[in-house]
Each structure stands twice: as C-alpha cells, then as structure tokens.
Figure 1 (tube, rainbow, N blue to C red):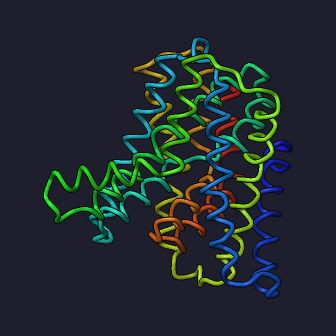
Figure 2 (cartoon, helix red, strand yellow):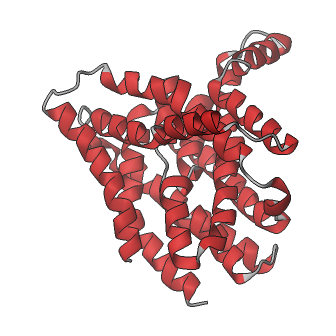
Length: 312
C-alpha cells in the first residue's frame, strides 16, 4: 500500500499544480494546448523512440503474455466502442477516444515502479512490454480510426490515401515505427543522443499531468459523473478481470508474469490519452477528468489486485 500511495501522490500533485495555476490565473487558457503540443510533437515521440528501441526484443517476446494482454485490450476496446454507440449515440471519433480511455494504462510512470517494488526487478520486463503495447497498438489504432472517420465521404481510395497521408506525418506513429526499426536492427544510440531522448522524454508525463490540471480547472466535472463511472469500471475492473481469465484458463503463465499481466491491465488511465484527445479535439473534458478519476479510484482497486495476486 505504501508504494501505491507514494506512486499516486506525485501524479495528483502534478495535476494539482496545473489546477492551481489555472484557478489562480498564473497560466493563461492557451497554456493547456501549448503544453500538449509540446508533449505530442517532442516529448512523447522521444519517450516512445527510446523506450521501444531499448526493449530487448529477443528476451521479452513472451507469446502467452502478449496474447492475454492484447486480446483483453481488444475485448475492452470493442466493448467500449459498443457502449459509446449504444449509450451515447457517438461518432467513430468519439468511440475511438473513449476506447483509448478504457484501455490506455499508466503502465510507465505508475505500473513499472509498482511492479518493481512488489515483484522485484524481473517484473520490469513484462511491465515494459505493456508500455510497448500501449505505444504500438492503442494510440495508432485511435489515430487510424479518427483519420478514417474524418476522410469518410470521399470514396474508398481517397479515404485510404487521406488517412495514410495524415498518419505519415503523425509524430506518434513515426516514433513507434522508428523505435521498432531500431529495436529490430539492434542499433544503439550514441550516449549524447540517448541522454537527449531521456531528458526530453522525461518531460512528457509531468507536462501532460500539469496540462490536465489546467484543463480540469476550467470545466464542470460534475456533469461527467455517469460517464466517468462507466469508464472507471471498464478500465479498472473489466479489463483486469478479462486478462485474469485469459491467463488463468487460456494462456497459462508463470505466477509473476500472470500477476503482471493483470496488474498492468488494472492501472489507471495514462495522461497520454488526454494529449491525444486534446490533439484531435475529441472528448477532451471527459479524457482529462478520466485521468483524475481513475487515478483516485485505483488506490482502492490496485490495492485489491495486489492482495489478490500476491496471495495467490
């Protein structure tokens, strides 16, 4: 419980800094978009390139682990999309961002420290694999769906061409591809380049969290309670429950790996989801509030998961 508190409190503190800066007018209304643009164009690509490129491909490709986590993620993605359509009559763009909010976990800044403390250094490997899944699958999937939606009505050839053209200059898609190429090739960064990417990438989380606080200070969160409840159940309960079922009966794993798959599925929404929502101007208030809500609720749900998993 101590590590959970010490990992979550800094997240809330950074959001609180942004919230206070917004309420006290220390930072203007343009600050949220400026911070998010910096994260989207510079800090997040640096983080993605470095984290994916440094992943030891030959050591971390655990098929059962990846299958359980990815199939669980896809199941929640589809369920979230269906609920978006049935409950709220939303567009494909809204459904894509809602699906990101239901699946994109804070596996990097919260999951990895938590995993290492509870299960030891060996747990960093599976935790890092979920970071890669977040980067390689969830964000690009959302970008593709949004671009397809925005190019609809132009004919199938133009939809494909327009979508590919937009994705070809998308910093997150390009950074994931770059990281994958470097990981497969085994090329190592010169020390100066590695330090540059490390410093720049480390700015992604703090800047995104401060931007969330700034944005939340300007919106009435009370009107989002119903939607936040549905999102929190999907992200913090249903996602880890599906993964637990998969590792228990379909894709058997060693106890530590099985526990890590479930624990990483149960992490709260990562701040990157807000960056993506802000970039595309889709469900921005809900995405920012979702980061805050799921992080707070995860103090309870992650504590339960830890007791359940460690005691298995």
